[in-house]
Image 1 (tube, rainbow, N blue to C red):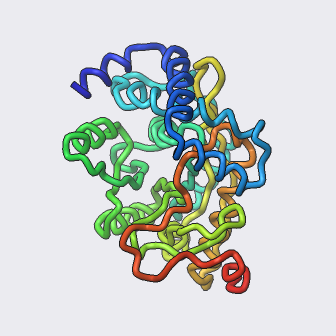
Image 2 (cartoon, rainbow, N blue to C red):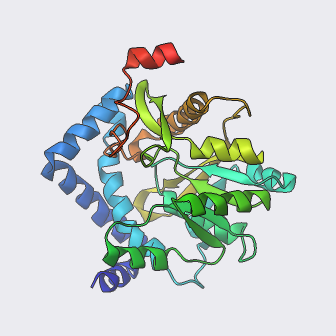
Length: 297
């Protein structure tokens, strides 16, 4: 049933899906008090005016409704004019160096499109872009997600030790990997680092990959254009992580780069994402206070 629904929605024009998504986002916001509270609290923590961030309510719904279009798009159907590039020369320069690229993307805009567009323009079956993903918890959904993300030039790596090894091999071959560094990692795989001034449990994987392989860090986000007109992919230089940086310092640098991107278009960030949650089963103690974080820095 889910596959049938996805295939049906995938046939609709992107502008229709985004229109439906805007309504879905607003409905979800007003139907869930906990979601509404977390959304407003995260905006306040970032120190942003409500007027500049409230557009993320509709943006979150558009993200949900565009997923069938992205996952079920025929393999032989190119994105073409649906995608515009900005800063593509940074990718070309990094590829020419042959040290690999770590593409860092926050929960902002359409992060699915960045990997698909990169795969279509720069990758191949021999040298794909490898994207880290966390398998769905529901068994019935896991197969749908995995099958839908198999596209030419796009490989996936599970959030496991085997997946980390897969990404290291890709970088050492001079290939590109993609990560969402503002995603709360599993227990024991992160450190507490400031995110908009508040301690957030942050993955250490991104920095470790950069330090171990000497790859180039680039920032990327897929801007969702108005009226279903497509997407604009923006590429920026990533943070420089010294090889001897402590995990906390490296994580803080990456978080700062995520903040800079989010401030460019706060109306497309997922403010409802539970960024400051306590990882389940974590055995390293509770999150430090803001004062503690300041002393550690």
